[in-house]
Length: 75
Image (cartoon, rainbow, N blue to C red; front, side, top):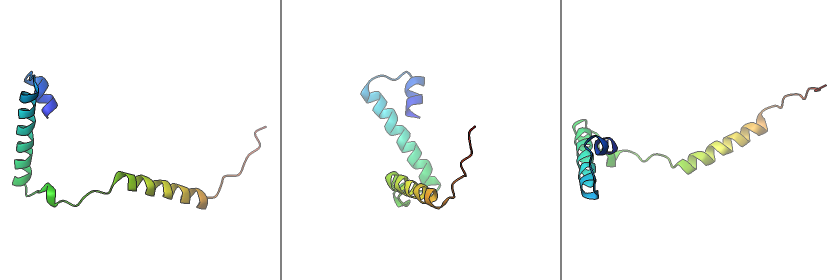
C-alpha cells in the first residue's frame, strides 16, 4: 500500500514516505480492531526452517519406503 501511494501521490523524502507508511499501518490496525483481530494475540506461525527440515526428513523417509521401479533394458 505504501509503495503504491508513494508512486501515486509522487512522494519524495524519508519524512513524507515515513508519514505515509505510519498512516497506512494505523489504518490497517484500526480495520483489524473493528473486526476483532488483535495480531499480538494470534498464535505464532511455525518457523520456516523447522518446516524445511520436516519436509526434507519426510522426503528421505519416502525414498526409503517407496519401492523402486524396475530397470528396463535401454536397447
